[in-house]
Length: 260
Image 1 (tube, rainbow, N blue to C red):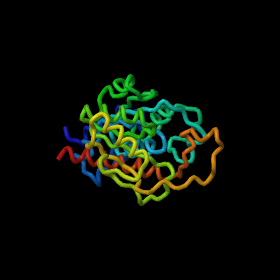
Image 2 (image 1 turned 90 degrees about the horizontal axis):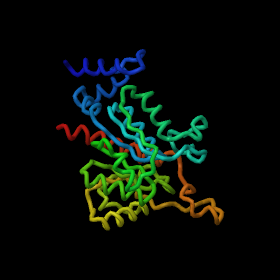
Image 3 (image 1 turned 60 degrees about the vertical axis):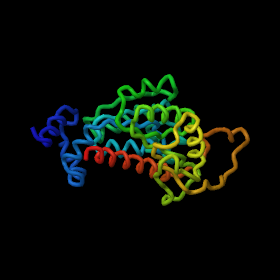
Image 4 (image 1 turned 135 degrees about the horizontal axis):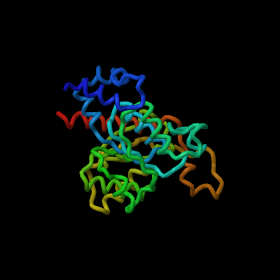
């Protein structure tokens, strides 16, 4: 049975019977060819963190036709998310990000198999959220502790991982770079993550997407009681999205590259 027939049969299993699977993905098929698209469809990608960065990364992964997707985020959508987070709107306020993400994935990739985890990432939950183990991972977590724990685990499991660094207080869309963790610079989050990974013996081997733009000054002073809240980090609509889309593009290219 050829690839085209395989794809048609798979689509018949979805609930969107009024759509044609090949028509949905025809532009991707034209660009990459049937064999490369089949590799993407047979891949398993995990996105950890579904905020400003992770939401856009997930969007690109889902629309590319990835067949198995793991999504992890314990948080609910808040009004302050709307300025930059793709999953956030006035209609999704108060909902779990993983629930909104699942619905969105299936609206553009109806036959995707989804593993959904509304869990906080730590040592205890990492074995749960990585079961089954993905082939590829995008780390879009903004908290240092969980980020380092996850990266260390994925590194030990030899999972190809792209780690997304800080998008806050960054406005230059042309300052985004992708380098090994050992070559990151300027980004405060990357500096801390790099230092913490060294403590557990990881000096290189993790790709990072980061901005080389120095963080801009905070224009609106916060009240004293607000200064310790990470949610008050200044952000703009496009920078997190660019970082997320770049990370997804790197993963998708790696999927194709691994098949050669």
